[in-house]
Length: 90
Image (cartoon, one colour):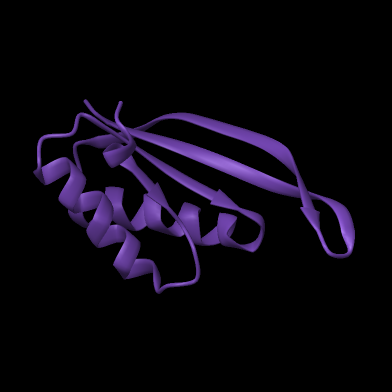
């Protein structure tokens, strides 16, 4: 998997990321990873589900990884949840 096969979820609308996922598969990728942290995790789940059910019926969730990352900021150190969803063609 190359870095091109990763979609990082931020604050844009869900359909922007769905388009990115669909484009990756249409360009020949056999696997695409959706990555998100913090509040964007629910958006990542939405992206995976909309991609699978509306646009890519032959794509399945192959793996889900969850973890906690330590982030340094001006206010000190904080823990942020992160998630990776691996989508794959059948």
